[in-house]
Image 1 (cartoon, rainbow, N blue to C red):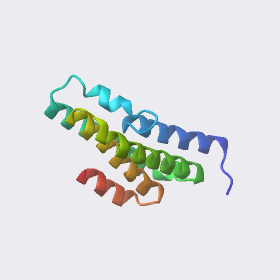
Image 2: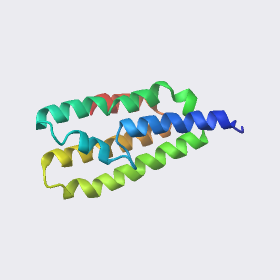
Image 3: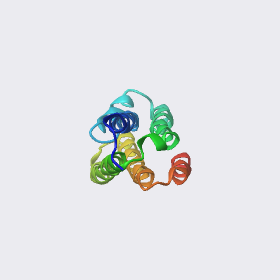
Image 4: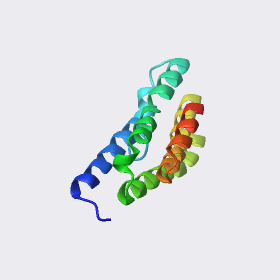
Length: 129
């Protein structure tokens, strides 16, 4: 079925909002910058809690973005972030940066699970993460 421009725009906006919140590519540096000044424990707990909100948003609004455009966009962003994070996480000089980058990569893989149409599994993975 063909989609209207409004449905495509809604899907892109929801994926964009979640992408920014979960620090996925091209916004992958947002989370690492937000935890720079914090102590390691508060940075990890604050960052760890807030980044999962994007996955919850996508899982609960799946009927609104679950189209060909939304699925391809979400899977592409997730795979790109996971691949990028797998390389970059090993290059960080500090533990905090490595953990933050690895978390973004894990969320990228959860994006792929969402794009495949498994929101409940994505939520279980998200809450377990």
